[in-house]
Image (cartoon, rainbow, N blue to C red; front, top):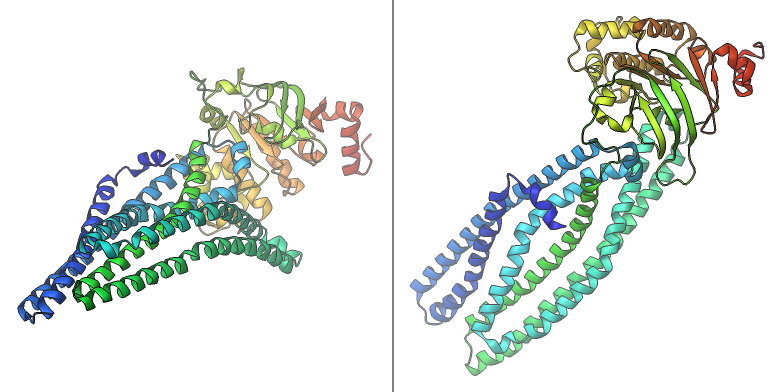
Length: 574
């Protein structure tokens, strides 16, 4: 897994090399101080050699300054390398998400993707920095302190034969217990982000139905579950602190007792026991640092696994080796198409066969849940059919490059999404090179210019996040204008005129009919008036084509269509 991270360290290789180098130099400075202290006490103070005391004290100050200097440089390079690598991972993960199909997003979920791009990436950056510093500092400190401890007094150093194995065993047992909790913690954060996203997006609904207390209770439930999981992990990890404290004091007690006896007997000097005690503390602190690093490293591995899942997810919407690069016309044909969403057993669409000529205006209607939106999502390959073929412009949609296919299709989804910026910047999502005149023309065709023209700044009027400063009907007209700017060969309106009044809807339909004779227009609607004049109307029922024809023929031949008409027109249509 760690090998997969190497490509994302590009531009930070120098820092990755220099961080542990300066870290080791800091360790050397720290290791020298107890040796200088031993000489200061046993040679300088014991023999009243003031010059030696001053010289050793000066050396200790210099060593401390150098240690602080090397440690500061190491911290800077480590932070730059760790968080720089995290930035590269975030960029690559975001680019990978852009290639996801709808089914990929359905599988991982948007809240989980947000957690992975934020919390998980931040954890990886922190652990990357710690890996370059603490993962080198603690082992080197442990090794050098052990070496000098045995060199000073191997008899006293025998205490480490007991404390080190016990410490290692405690670390292993604790992390075996805590690793599954780290993984559960990330899942809890996903759930928490999910409820936050849902409630903030639906804040108007919550207030309209006075469901504040219910929303707060649901949030607190997820929040508490996340907190409890994290506290479980912390409680287990914190067991290490008293364990290592016990080890340190046990070792010091052993050393002070046996060392004091040797000092009393004259076989050891006082400075030696002071220096030896310092090395004991350095060794045990190194073990605590290793355990702390392993805790964060375990968390980081969990986060890295989740981010790598994004990078390694491959969309089933692939580009063929020799793709068709242009859509010849707007003809559409469904040839025995069946489809089900990932993770479901039952087909949503079943054996759909229909044909639409280029330039036709086609209405699609049916009861709620009849898979109208799913049907049109197969045309631009937002999903791929499990069986059968979707033919656009005489070619199977799987023979096109996805970008070439989608550039020829203007799609206005049910949820009318506008992006923070201005009206003009939103329109240029449809055509990045569109002039102001082209934008105004598209707004006029979409019946949006009548309200945009009233703003003092017209097309430079600001758009708040999600288009919150526009009504539902205004957002629908703006998104239709954006789709028209693409000059599509196929325009799909997925229930995107539902908020328009009858008069505006009629004017829009006239403009679409006259806009381009060769543009195929598919209109999913619940209102009969929106599709009455269509060249062809497709009636769906439970994922199957129940009937096709004109308004007049369907009134005569389709019971489902006739019932819809009667429900809307009060039974007057006969």
